[in-house]
Image (cartoon, rainbow, N blue to C red; front, top):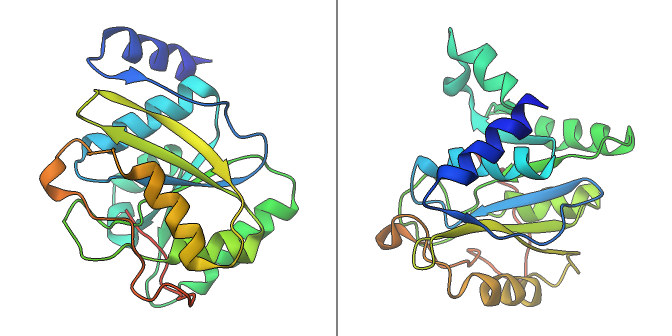
Length: 197
């Protein structure tokens, strides 16, 4: 209740406008893109809290050290040990089987840096868990942010990415110069690196 109230206040006073399709009704991999600024995290929380979505997000272990750990976990953070990425998928599968409805937020274009490719961990997690993918976005050109469609991946990586590219084609991010085109390094074959914030 408090989170939803804070989110309403945020959207009432923010320069950004929330534009969203219906909130997911089953566990979903929530893609956050283009990820070009630290403000994307605030917008993600504001979207999720306003729509009543229980969100979790993947972050590198260093973000959870010391006093920051309880805060990050309280905001839905899941620390990722890059030496043991398979554990994350197993944890997510366990939550799906338990019937928990949540959004697992991933930022496949990396950490605010104009990379050449998206990381493909979001795709692997969705396929291995049977979760759909919900396309979250930030677009500075229209000052809008929110959730787009929720899609089921087919396993045809190139075709699935074509649909994702089409959605993000006109989305610029908060810092457009840092935007990465939605493209996997080897479309047509799944890879295994999980995404971290």
